[in-house]
Length: 352
Image 1 (cartoon, helix red, strand yellow):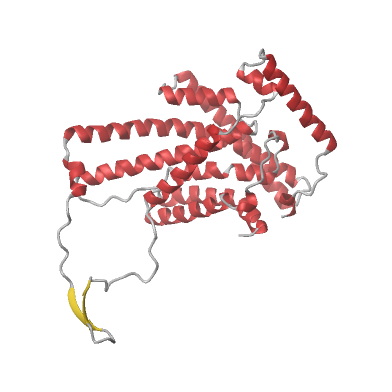
Image 2: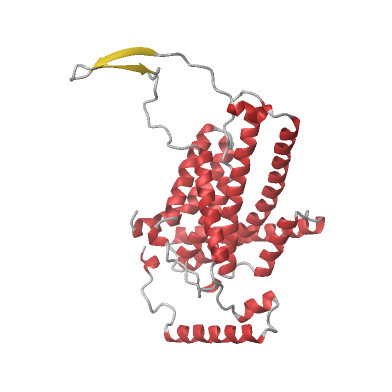
């Protein structure tokens, strides 16, 4: 995928996500057609996120008001993947309690994978100052300690979600009108719409992470109860399957007149299309490992000097050494912006 095509696909990511939401409402997340479409869409978004042409969209010195349209669209990719990963359905094969334990284990992996993607999205929002560090820290503390939300917290979050959704719908309406009229301010309207969409995505990500934590706790309890109740759940997976027949024994004679016996395994009725190379669970395991590795690398990455406003949020404004480092960093960044006015360079993202 070239650079031009990557930016085109980046613009279509929002449409793909909303099409999946519409298809879920029509068919249900458990339908085979929806699951097949879900797999294709997630693979498409993963390839887009890993595209080298989009790897240098962000700069460590950029803040929220400096983000371009393509950067906001790329930021939302992990949110889309995190929301879609929760809809992955594990196909159960009837056979007793062992199937239930396998389903529970697979569901836990999917939830962990989805939570890791939402974590990456929220952390990136903190880095570009779209989410306050104090709010993110409070959310992580609540998840780690397993505290339940109070009635006041739920009401406040519901009100914030309603306000954000209402603002988003208003901007979407303005964007559609601007597209119909070919408005010159369409780029600014699109950027404002993406900011509102990120606000809604942050609230939904936090809400879904709380739901994921509750469901994971329930599923882990089910696994522990199964272990205490009977060991047959796990012994059944280790049993040797019954023989499926010896097949047809055929004798071949090669050009050297040597005789060789083969067994033909009833492979007559095979599908005419290529079968998947891996299951959804295997794909989720691989992506989860990559997401956790990236998250660990981000945690271990050296932390540079913070800005003055970040020190105030973290409560470190009284530390003179940190304040001096932050002052020098802000001055250097201001000098760079004075020497390089906005728009002086050729931004490739605006060419497509």
